[in-house]
Amino acid sequence: MACPDGSTVIEYRDTADGLEACQLTGFFVDWLRQPTREAHLDILHGSAHLVVAIDKESDHVVGFVTAISDGVLSAYISLLEVLPEWQGRGIGSELMGRLLKQLKDLYMVDVLCDPDVQAYYARFGMQRSQGMCIRRYDRIPGGETGG
Image (tube, rainbow, N blue to C red; front, top):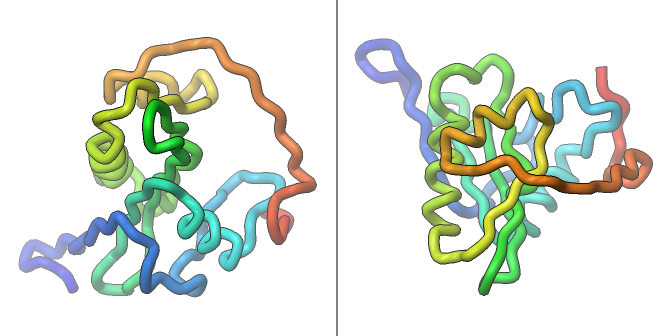
C-alpha cells in the first residue's frame, strides 16, 4: 500500500506472532555464515523484546531489532538490521526508539558493536564502554554461506 505521495507504509510490530520465514529474506548481509530464514524466525520468537518493520505493500519484513533480557535489571540489544535497499529512511532509528521505550525501566541496556557504528548508537544516549566477546561462526543455526 503506497501513500498518495508515493511513499510506502511501514507497520511496526512488537511481536513475531503471525510472521512466516518467507517474509524474512535479504538479511545478514556480509555475514560469513547466515542464519536460515527459519532460524531467523526462531531468533525473533526467542527474543525477550523485539520490533519488526513490515512493508505493508509487500508484507515483507524490511527491518528488525531484538533484545534479550532478565526482565528486571538488564537487557542486551543483540541485533539491529534494516535491508540495504531500505536503509537511510529512518527505519533503524524508529526500530531503536521503539525498542528503547520497551526497555526504559531497566537499569542497564547494552549493545556490542563495531567502532564504525558507535556514533549511530550514541544518538540514542548510549555511551562507549569496554566489552569482550566470543564468536563461533560454525554455530550459526543453518549457517548458510553468505555471498
